[in-house]
Length: 162
Image (cartoon, rainbow, N blue to C red; front, side, top):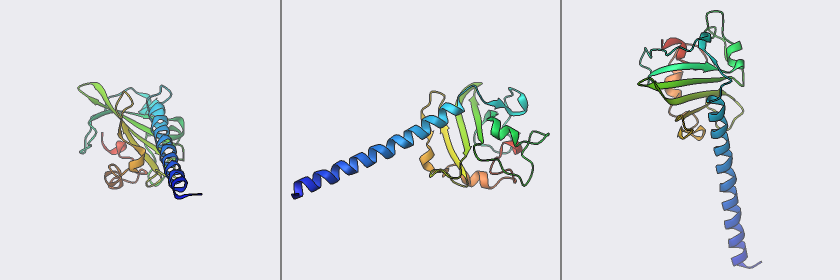
């Protein structure tokens, strides 16, 4: 094989690798957005309530939703019992509102096996139209420092911010 063919082969292999990685990241972001914005989630304490963001939350007024896996982990008081953790597969979504209009989905998915996980969670934020604000590939870099500073509720702060 001559050097032109080797160079071309390496270029094509690199381009293909980049395309595959980018597609996987896009699919992961799309899948999290689709689940976060779906109608299959349940409101916190079963109430469609706009919560006041006390305690310095950067997210503003919010509604809180859980998938069934996360919901099943909550105690009778509607909180994760101290010292307990959410099971793998848990999804927690903050629907953030600005002037009573949905402006952001802040999403946490418990998936310690994901290459995008940080502290066992995959983190992302999306605009209501699905545009990625903070992608899963950031590995929670914009989220984890605050979430680690909270009370012992498996890196979730929502129970303390209203």
